[in-house]
Length: 166
Image (cartoon, rainbow, N blue to C red):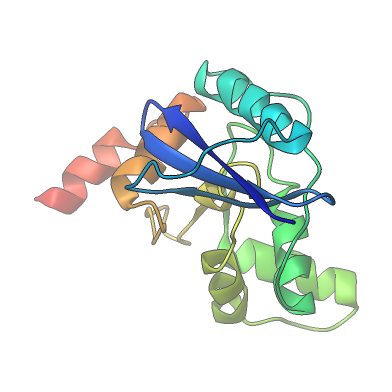
């Protein structure tokens, strides 16, 4: 059975979903229509979010239950290797995935597609993936939230954003 909860963050409402195996979804949401039943995984995720939004590395990962294709899940597991306060590119992820698979190359676009379908934002840190030129590329929560998340982690993108707006 899937249970839901809301988490009110400094960047807006976050909707959480978990089953008995782990967290299945974490994403920014406009509505606050979920009522928590006190599911232990949702409570642990709330604790993770409290630490994260205080500007600290939580140092643990709540249990996760990925719901996606095998390729997507492989990419999402790679995202977990991106350290707090660091970024990587789609190309670097593609190279690492190719290396792990023992193949010559992997398309960065394919990796980007999987990154974009990540259902467990923040904890599976798709916001830490940027363009090869250092640009803030797409983010389901919006580029403003992506920039604020990276800033929270100590990465300054304000100068880059100002250049893009001109």
